[in-house]
Amino acid sequence: MSVKIGISLIAWQNDDLPELTKDYTTEGAMEDAAKIGYSGVERGRRMPADTEGLRAYLDRYGVALCGGWCSGNLMVNEMEAEQAAIRAQVEQFAALNAPCIVYAECSNTIQGNIDQPVSQRPKLTREEVIAYGAKLSELAKWSKDQGVVLSYHHHMGAMVQDAEDIDWLMEGSTEDLTLLYDAGHLHFAGADPVAVLDKWGHRVHHVHFKDVRQPVLDWVRAEDKSFLNGVAAGVYSVPGDPEGCIDFQAITDRLNAMDYSGWIVVEAEQDPAKAPPFEYSKLGYDYMTQICGRSGLQIER
Image (cartoon, rainbow, N blue to C red):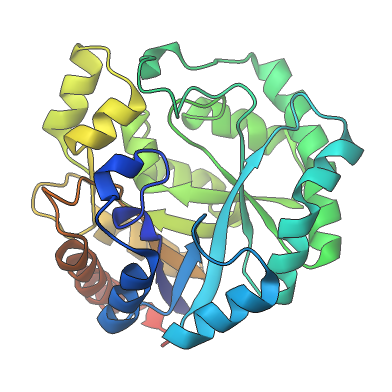
């Protein structure tokens, strides 16, 4: 099977902690990503908003649009209101042949609050998540009918964070809703990334790879810190960083075994003063090519 290797520009352009990356431009990030060899980038807030402007911008650097974040509010919105809220992004992503919209419920998340410990994230009951999954399936079907798959992003600080939450969401939803698989968020949440992939690999449509520095994660837990405290302290890194602790070879082996054919996106929000974006993004790309090759995953350039 073949995969495509993309990147989120969050290492150069952190939207949650903009002070970390104030010295970097989106244009410089795009140039770096293309020079390293990435085939696609996920949409960032500082890219052109209009579809044709974004198309020309991507073409200028020779990269594809390989997804992008969507802050969902389906827990509090009626279906028609949520469709209206995300319609422009759905239409744009369909026009640009993006593989998916990266959707996550943000009406009740604490992920963007640097003063609120991640331990205080919303934890819903099984019944509540299953009911949400049923409602989300309707939105996912609508989006798919417009030409774009909806991939749900489990995320630290959010109501769908750990393996149990993912189980409930997948059980309560139809296959119109797919799963974004993020190894770094799973490890941070205390889940076994390989076990989650073994269980829900048939629903995975999009993949994010970022590694975790275990000592920083231990500090976040011991000191009851926020998600953004952890990011600023360096809890995440790129795959291939010797300081990381996730076995990405085992994950790519599983992806090959399940005939995964899609995007694998390097996404590691870090302080560029401690982790120079070009250097670390190249480290991630080079390591990805090695482990995909060993797993038998052909990389589509």
